[in-house]
Image 1 (cartoon, rainbow, N blue to C red):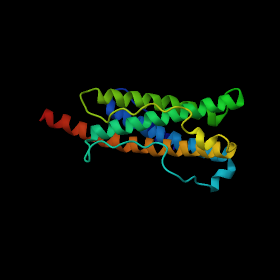
Image 2 (image 1 turned 60 degrees about the horizontal axis):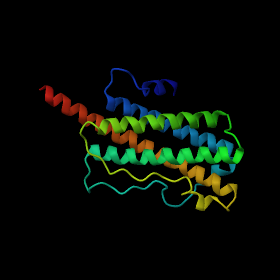
Image 3 (image 1 turned 180 degrees about the vertical axis):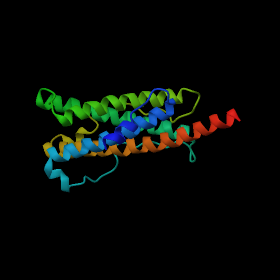
Image 4 (image 1 turned 60 degrees about the vertical axis):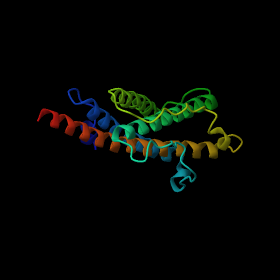
Length: 194
């Protein structure tokens, strides 16, 4: 697995789309590991899969969106996921009085930083004249509190679990979409050379 992680690390000299796709793959792997660590920490969750609607839902672009529009769509979802993750961190600090330190918290910080970088990178790809979905409004940290407040720590833990599932879903979607976008962009560049 160590060798695979190295191959997904963004490398200088690659195209911006290729680097963004590699970052999305790395981030997806990090998010999957983050969920594993969370399940280890909260062992009672290992047999419970929370139901309900997706936390991150976006209005789709036109019926047959271009790949660039799909990148814009995924970028909006990633931005929402980052906001949810920031809410989780601030809630934990508020409840505990400080941010805990451990493997889970360290990886969560790495995920937050990489997620911010991926949101920025995909935005830079779209600034090259490509279209995208309209930006979604910023999430307020109290949006998820209805199902958490007054329900005890179990509800808060389920909400955290659901946020981690969203991160996994949307980073995988970003990885796939950016791979297609890279392939299309590379094909267009090769045709221009002919």
